[in-house]
Image (cartoon, rainbow, N blue to C red):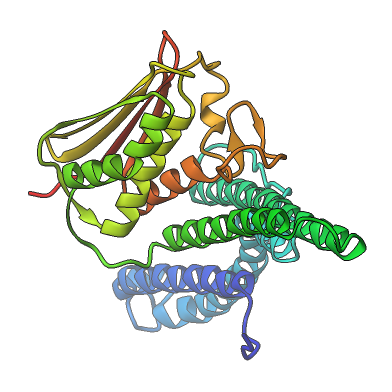
Length: 359
């Protein structure tokens, strides 16, 4: 933004200090004038014929007062300039750090020393902001790199299949079309998941009254064939649990949780339990599943994009795209809720979602 040049903050503070000191000096001289000279006789003999009269005192006092005022003004300007410089030195460091951040250097930190005051508090808040920005930018870069890799993989497979078909016209056409359709479906699913993740991150959706128990039943009904195919018992319990939000996003949230619980379960004989309840002013959804034991240090990474199980997604063997829990975390955050993931001692995972309840 273009601004007209003006006085610096240091010069303004200097002039303020000097003006304050000059006014204080003038008031002091006025007090001396009023309470001292008023008792001096205004005659040629003075007091008792010995003390000087008012005329002589005025002639003696006026030049001294003028010199004192000039000294106070000069002292105020010099001292104010030095004091203003020392006071504004922390602000200069903050400005330098802000300019470096504006040029793309987010790793710089002020780390201002000294006791706590307004400038140190501002510097600490700025350092915290830079740390969060650096972490967010790094996360976005990793997300973009992984998303590019995931989108490039099905495109590369499609290109390979087309090249093989072009070189071998006798190849089975139905098999080629089936494989191309599978690869294209995966690319579409990934693209839709990325769009949904972006939408939930922005939080631009219309809020309405939603019953999470009905959402859980709908999600379970949709995924029941998948659970039966894998030999998983799927149960939905609890009562009416109301919250405010997007019905579509909340359905996707519960669907992703249930699908994740079904897929990452025991080979056979596993269970998935979805429970909804109101706890005070919060609406709670719990999804618990059996499965293999999870290392505690792995659990915090499960909500990262393209994180599946114990490693990053780099194959096409899994039907998912590695965004299930990342989308859940984004939807929960957009609805002002919390997401807790706790590994079960016997294996599997317990996921608890807490959303603001309806009165």
